[in-house]
Image (tube, rainbow, N blue to C red; front, top):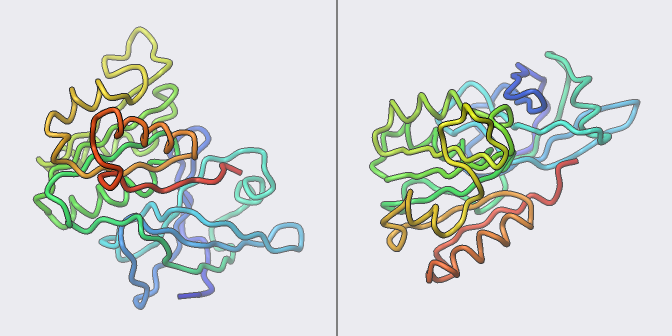
Length: 233
């Protein structure tokens, strides 16, 4: 579905991550985990890029994508974007989806790769699904964790959801997990990993690392669903 729209709201998630919300047309239907194409204008020309949809289908009033802002041309255009500015959206796309097909899922994300996983967590929580969900979410520092407060609140709302925040540059005050997502961490946090279907999203290097992790756990490749982020520009 292609439609003309406008920026409804811009939400800071961290010091360099923002969510961009647009009114959701009633006719727009999508699955948690899918992505969209957005086109905006900057300096008299149109710029287009695809992003995972960070909102959930259960959020009826808006559709949202979330981006880590860099110094790229597209990021620079987004920084200049304001509420009411026009945009075009083409959605939905992608097969990296979950709507309750499995009893247990493990979500393996890093950095801005959290976006489709947030959509899945929100959907499962709002729909009160019985799916047991464990999210392993890695970041460099605590300030880099997007959606942290919301994910913590979701855990209180959904007894089947466990969110594990992992830092590889933790300070002395951090009481959570440290290091990187590896086989030992999966065994500790997801003891029933053999019966768990995994989802991972991030840059190719991270997805490849998660593929090796699944192999090291002795699980078939078919037990891992992948979404590649081709860049952060």
